[in-house]
Structure formats: C-alpha cells, structure tokens
Image (tube, rainbow, N blue to C red):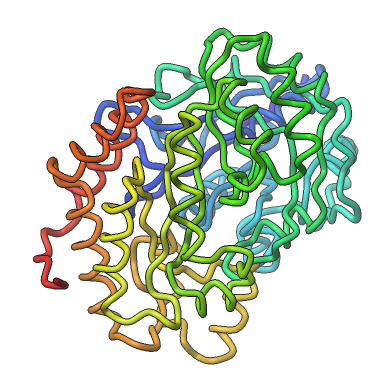
Length: 435
C-alpha cells in the first residue's frame, strides 16, 4: 500500500490563518480533505497541519501533497525541499502554484494547474507507474455532481475554534474583480452542486453550526433559493459570503435568514465609486449601501463587512471615511485589508508592468502589509493608517456599540468582534490622527 501525506504549511507573518499559542485556528479548509477523499482506497492517507505540528522529513511516505495561500508558499517550498532532500516525491497545487507553476517546479516534482479533480487519479496512477509528469493541467472546469465528501475525520478538530464543519456548494464568479484570483482559478461561470448532494453532506455534520466557503453563496439566485428552502427543515445555523445585492431580493433575503443564515460576509471593499468602477464592482454604490444594510439587519442577519484601503483613489482620508461608515451603519464586525496584488490577478500583472510592486517576499502577501507603491499617499502613511483604523475599530467602546445594536443574534456579533480584537491588539499601537 502506498502512503500519501498531505501538508498544510504555515505563515509566520501577518494576522490571518495562523494558529494561536493554544494551538487553535479558525475554519477548516477543504482542499486537502477533499483530495484525501478522492484518493483511491489502496492508498494510506494522512493530513498534517504544519501550523500546529512539526514536520518530520524522515518519515516513510511515498508522496507528499502540499497547497497553501500565497503567504504560506515560502513555508510550503521549505517543506517540499525538506522531503525531496530525503528522496520523497512532492506534488503541489492551488491558486498560487497555478499562477506561478515554474516557480513551484523549483521545489516540487510535479505541479497541478487549475482544479485538481480532473487530473488527480491520473497523477497518482502515473506516480505508481514511475511516470510522474512535471505538470498536470486541468483543461476543463469540473461539473459539480457527485463530488467526494471531504474526509474531515483526518483533521484534528480540537484545533478549530470558529467552525469545524465547512462546505462548498458552488464555484466561480462572473464579476472578475481585478484584485481577486477566484475568476482565474474557478472561472467566470457559476457552477453548483445538486442541492440534494449539499443537503446530504450537511446532514452528516455532527454540529448545528456550519459555514459555506463559497465565494458568493447567493450568486445564482434560483440555486440559492432552492438550497435555502431545503435547509429550513434541518434547523441548522450557518454563515456565508454574499454580495450586498442580496438586499434587492426580498424573497432571497428572507430565505437566507429562515434557513439559519445568522451572518453574512459582504465585500464592501471601497466607499469610492471611482475605486469600485476600477475594481469592476460598479454594481455596488456607496449611496445604496445604507438602505441595503438596514434591510439585512432587519432580516436578523449580522454583517461581517470587508473593506480595503490603498486603492488608487484613496488618500489618507480613507481611514476616517471607513471608520465613520462602519460606526454609522453599525456594521457588526469589519475585516480590514490592505490592497494586495496576488499572483494570478489582473492587479498583479498591472502593478508588475508599472513597476509598482516593491516586495516579492510572499510571506508579506497577507493583506496587512504594504508591498506596493500607493498613488495618493506614501507606503508608510498607508501602513500606519491601516494599523490605526484596525485598532480604533476594535476598541471596547466601538465593539460595545456594535454588539448592542440589537439583542437578536448578539452572540455571533460578540464572537466575531472578540476574534478581530485579538488581531487588532497584536498590531502596532499607532495613534489615530485622522479626525
């Protein structure tokens, strides 16, 4: 029997996706458990989370599979090099590797470009036959019928404090935002699993709470409505990522809440119409946000808003404008990010061509450090303003005002705010001087 070891690398910088001093982290990522489920039964399969456990390069395994976010890629390469030094073959994949396969091939015996499902069994067969190819390219986007259920039993569930049960019901996004790699990897067309498959997987969860990791769970309205209707009898609670346009469809918004949707991650990104147009998000308008937020709150749904600073139309006034918007609209919690040109995005290619990328240390590509030349402020102004904004957003007084917005679903608001406050308090204590 052959043995494969899947490894999730670590990120030693930044504030996202890390493991706490107590060995805890947030949501379960599905890529490695899904590949484990697709691996034939004549393989012995193990998943190692290198964020919480040391890597033993002398282990007797036949093949190592690694994927990771861009900020984790240096760790992934280090792990790959360690295994290959001891004669163990390594295959790598994921969004970063798909964007820069030749870079990854300096550290791996083989790379997968694009979705792994169409090529995974062929890759394993080639390995067994001693004919492993350097590149396996997925030439098509998969249909999502009959997908393997991730092997969550291979994970150490004690690590996950936010939610152990995560699920994907759809892939793809038609909006093609310049800063996002989703379109390049998953395509511009929404693809959906049969609702019955999604419900069957959810019924197997051993907790009431779960999270949809889809890039936009309401992206195809007819599918979302069918899915939410089917969820109602299960009496579960969940959250997911959605567009602000959910507020334009009263039926969809109502079903989101009735089916157990307690919170929604919404990418506001910018409060500048010029920025939104440049990002290809012109369907969002700052003037329409206020009413949309009111309707979502009225439905009983908490909003985790995502905001980005450092876009080309931003100057130092962006920090006060963002803080005031969060405060005035009682955004339940805010994820604040610095614009980051990830490989595989149009933004990366544009900034690279213009000579605006100032650092290619992938460990810094975690959306909390400035790695490019901003247009209307200095890099230091952007960095210090970001720290000040994050810390001011998560002062106890600001948290209290948001949490006391309504007693409805308050426990979710408290949990989100405490989690983000921990990140804020690890940031430099930069004075707020933007009033």
